[in-house]
Image (cartoon, rainbow, N blue to C red):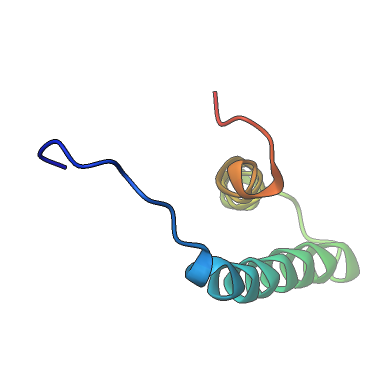
Length: 65
């Protein structure tokens, strides 16, 4: 900022990896629970799935747009 060159720091990558892993587990467990209980998939399940995919795409190397 203010004329300086931006630097990148990879120190948060392990932390991101842990939280993405926890998110994967939570989404998968929720979907498995819906299948095992034979409950209907509704808008909240689809929102969780699309939100998860949309937020993790940049971290997986895909462009966000």
